[in-house]
Image (cartoon, rainbow, N blue to C red; front, side, top):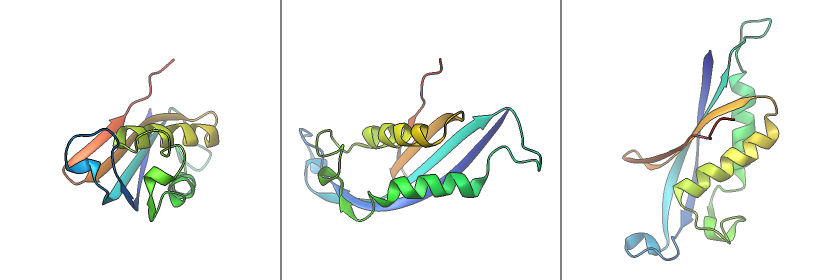
Length: 123
């Protein structure tokens, strides 16, 4: 079994509706996102999954979030732009693009000290 991971970042502002504390106010982060896919096979040249292809898909998804107020970008105009919801949203968007590839996890970090990892349930 092989796991292949890529990491990208985007800069955005957000606020958490209904939160009681500083995060209810508009503030920004450099969000770090790491995607890990899993496969049991390698292709004819020995790659489990092409880093460049995985990065391209992730960049295209993150591009629409970069330098925005997340609360104004669907689906975060309806749901809180928490790291948990960001990770889940990225997972579903990647799942549509990577047919036949198992996504092991999506990790979203708001800072070096604060990360959330989404682990999709198998089967």
